[in-house]
Image (tube, rainbow, N blue to C red; front, side):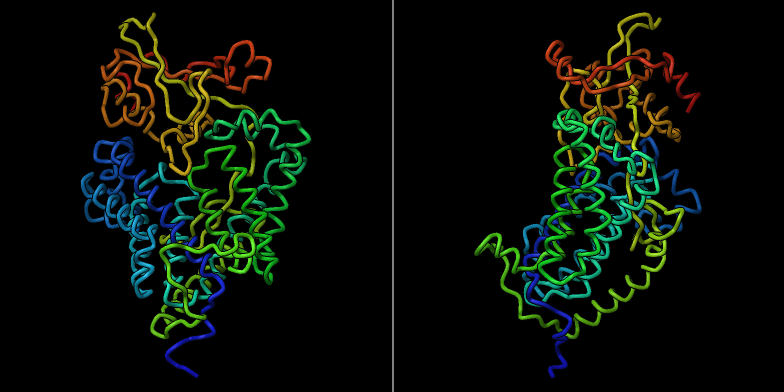
Length: 487
């Protein structure tokens, strides 16, 4: 027996899976860090809508693991974000994977720590389940080794366990949630009322209702049945993973859920072995990588892998119990490090779509001249076809969707109106259309409209994608002083 290697720990049957997992998760990190560099200062920076320096005055914030607990500046945030982009790009290219495995592990842990630091001061703008998902995925994928070693089996198992919690947790949330998931009517509404529709969302919404019922059944099968088969022998595990990948691709095509579906597709490759890949795509291989050993993992690397695996198993008790709990938590972290979390989404489906439309005017009386600010992702102009943005995350657009559902603005919405009245350039860069071309309006207001997709007949006559009707006034015409008093 070769005590310098742990032959039982590694396998050479998942080289393709390892490449997809490492490069895919790194690609999502790259997008996430680009998003932070682009949006974080305007949303959460020194002069943002929810400034991090103010947040760090609270004892709760100072207890979070983040490098910003000692000091925050927009310059430091950008430095961290762009460093994350560079490291992520190197991993996407596969260059560190050609070195000894410790380098890949260290770089992924750097990405995890850097993004964890951002998430833990991101407040409501980073309060999404896929933030914790990316943190957990980054930490777990860090222990996959490199091209010169076998792929650690414990790490593959833990990635499958992550996918199981993600998918089965979402399925159980739906069964325990709104009746529409149990009577198979949820997709009558979902494509129309989802947070960020895409260019094909209207077409999906207009499908026959029997197809929508089939979508729900397919979703239940993919989320409640297939996850168990990820732990079955091959090729059963690969077939289960492929079924779940197909459902995720449908969600990618018909919506904009940031990187949630994209990273799920990547993580599902943990269930697909090389034999299946080569049977589907004969002779396919990565151009940069070198073949892994037959399966050995060096002892000096295997011991840390086993220690990290033991930690993740230890942290799994509460998330596992949560899956069976009657009051199941959704998108919850049980520790400050965002490891081994509880996931789930859309336990209930909104039946109606309300949107908040912000307008401004140069008329000091507010009697005329109102012009509409346009956001990138959320519906505004009824004639505009929604676009794809995922995996890029439009954080302000998502928060506007929650606000229209009745969520508390937490002060950020009033400050957003102040920034529009000031014609604040960083804030205006978050929008698609500034109707005043960089000038400050005299007044702004916020109206609520109910949106629905135009039928085929309505679209032929009017050319509109959406039909909307006004529901009321959320914020009456206000100037800078009025809104500052509200804030």
